[in-house]
Length: 250
Image (tube, rainbow, N blue to C red; front, side, top):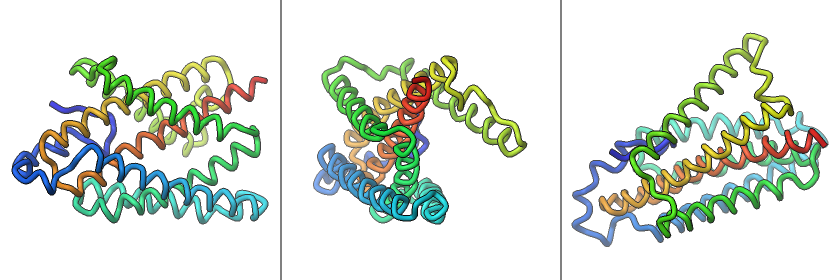
């Protein structure tokens, strides 16, 4: 069974597409998926740059709250619709990238204002992790066995549960303090979460490769690119939080 911690790339995504393998001219390819992923990254970066500039010109986060809230709502809606309508990925994946970029731009600018240079470091670490794990996967240094997949899947579920409990407690006026402070416990937990997010990239690579092998239709290149983007955004945010905690101790 294919298993991934990424909710956008679940175990049933590609299982019905073997019949498409007959006509390889209209099926998903690795190069096509890489191209679509690159296009989504460009859209996300451009959108993030726009909201970053807007935040700086507004002189404070209050002026760009509509960007952040609107981006969160639109990206969430796009993700929910894509869960049921993967064939709409060519339209909705770019919508998600632009909406998520608005959120990341505001978030990144806020962190950069407090810790100069942190965004550049985070971008370098995120893409360094991406290309390192892709190289390790392609050369066979990392093999996504069933036990590996099960472990990453369980760890990702645990992180999601932890964040859900924290969100509920936050709404009740409490919260889990060690998730947000700069103690060594909090830094250690963030480091573990970064590793879990990074390992999800390996599962995504494996899942995309299986999609190509099963002859998934061409629109799945957009959907797979969207799924990979979800993991990259998560990894970026977690690295950003980890570096901010480390800088807070200086």
